[in-house]
Amino acid sequence: MPKTSPLLIDIGQGLSIMTGLPTIAFWKTADRPKNAKNGTFGFNTQTNSLEYWNGTRWFVSQMTEDNF
Image (cartoon, rainbow, N blue to C red; front, side, top):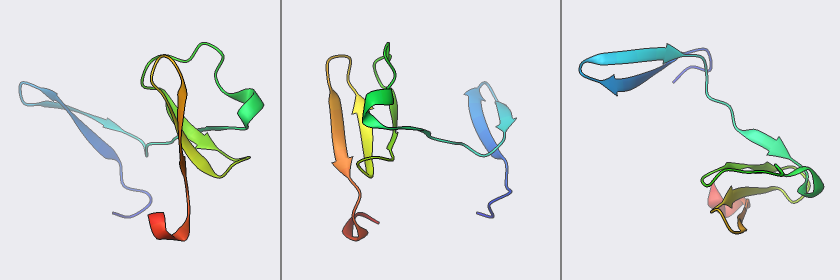
């Protein structure tokens, strides 16, 4: 998909919403969201990892060349 393509989101009953390109939040460890909601995820630029908040703790997935 070209970098400038919009994203169509199916909202049911034959309807969809067109949005811009999706983005992912990013932060350093000390700047993680303080009141993160369950399911929050983002990229930690300090540790080069994807992080996911499950409502209790942050899960971390290190990004390496093997992950791509």
